[in-house]
Length: 138
Image 1 (cartoon, one colour):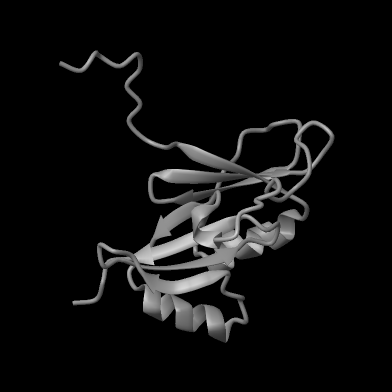
Image 2 (image 1 turned 90 degrees about the horizontal axis):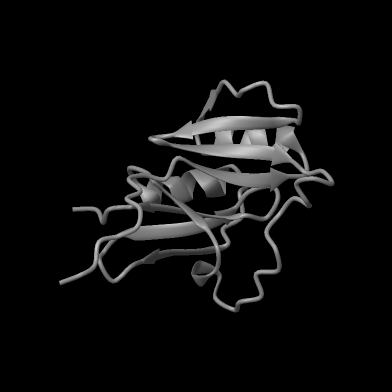
């Protein structure tokens, strides 16, 4: 019989990313990914919040306190296996076409996972890896 867990988390509330340029991040998360900007508490440091379904992205401007924008040295040789955040969308193939049309470079993919889901990877303005995925087309 498994032992009871210490805690019982039930959702990812937010992911925080450190940004070099808030306006570049605003454009990416709002205009490219289509996330809705949401009000942010009056913290004593600059930042932006965006809503993606039930999860928020908290963008914090780089500073001495927060550290530098962008991921730490990813070092791996296979992009899709590195640190990343993933977002579901309706149609990965259509998203790839839209990304190409907008001149957004593809970091990896598009490809099919073994379960049939389609996925593609892009990077935000600070180099954070973002996976976009959808169920396989019927």
